[in-house]
Amino acid sequence: MAANKARKLLSQLIAVIIIAAIVFACLAIFRVGAPPSITIEPALPGIGKRTPVTVTVEEPGRGLGQITVELIQGERRKVLGGRVHEPRPFWAFWGPRATTDVIEVEAGRETFEGLREGEATIRVTAQRAPTWIRYPDAAVLETTLPVRLVPPSIEVMSIAVHAAQGGSEAVVYRVGETSVRDGVRAGEWWFPGFPMPGGDGQDRFALFAVPYDVGDEGLVRLVAVDDVGNESAAAFITQFFSKPVKTDTIRVSDGFMEKVVPAILSQTPEIQERGNLLESYLAINGELRAANAQVLVDLAESSAPAFLWNQRFMQMPNTQVMSTFADRRTYLYEGRPVDEQTHLCYDLASTQRASVPAANDGIVVLARYFGIYGNAVVIDHGFGLMSLYGHLSSIAVSEGEEVARGQSVGRSGQSGLAGGDHLHFTMLLQGLPVNPVQWWDAHWIRDRLSSKLGPVLDFQE
Image 1 (tube, helix red, strand yellow):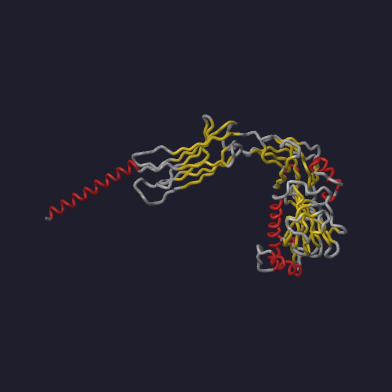
Image 2 (image 1 turned 135 degrees about the vertical axis):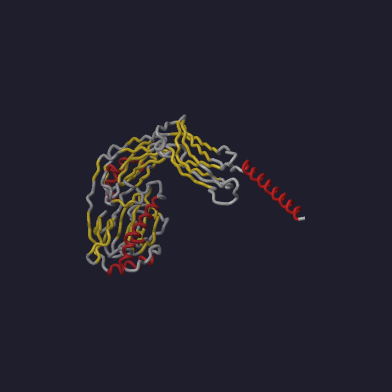
């Protein structure tokens, strides 16, 4: 009996071993990885200087193996990127493996030496998980894109462009047909171009400014870019006027901070109290000032694509200039410097609660409590040009309202970061504060803008 039982157990063990060997052999023969799915997503419609390309590879079974991304033109090829993964062994049904990978590469003249105009192919090769016996063909996906390396042309049409640091100007120019984005780059600021009425689409003009902190005309260029990122740039300023930095000292007292800090914090929940009066004031003067500046840039993106005005801009009447544009202020507390900021406006003082007129025709795009400016109004005058009225005691207009030149927008006051009753006034171009003196001057508008733009700006002196 015992011998029969032993023989039976041995037979069962041999059967199990045979079955296991068959299963293992089947796995070794048949359990190769499935072909990975591949997507290739160029960020641009062609290849230029640098075209970002996103490659996504997925294999949810045994996982990914080696991935290679190449750029191919004719007989030449360049590996742009890739990754090496370790799939699960053919016999394992558990354990780590990478099922998805996203690879970012750049294809273009700067990543492929000797690239020529014409066409080039992006090829992605994703190896499949092998077994001991089988090494299946890799999954391959290709996409062919046009190669364009010549940037759009630019021709400056304006005979004279006189630009001043902190000031505004206009330039008329013509771009080639491949241009999809053009305008003036001044330092880190961008001033978009617009079509000249009656032209063929390539005749353009741009209102631009030289930022108050840019004293080098070499940082101001007319730019045209095509749809694959090829860029041409041209110098166009015939005369440049730099402006020396003026400095000023502001003494910050406990009494002043006790007046302004709680009022601003109560109206501005995004700025939290910092534990003491001075630190809260510095957060308002720095962080909130920067946040307000960004809001002004964002507002410019929805500016009307038309001139909404045709007369010179008004200075608030019967006012005394208390401080001028782009003064560099050092803030002193108890005799020591605690902060530095640039004062980007004109402070205009009159009688208390004096009526504040709209500087020109336009549409109100902001009318509310606005951080360091307190009660404030911003009027859009078209093509990214706006005017700002701050520290008001009251507001007489609402957002979306059309206003006429000279119409009251509110009354002067001392809301926000104001030490006394006055109007904080500045002009903005694409959100950048610019010197308002030019816009108050009919001769400047005629000579620098109207003479170039003609019927685009129907200026009435």
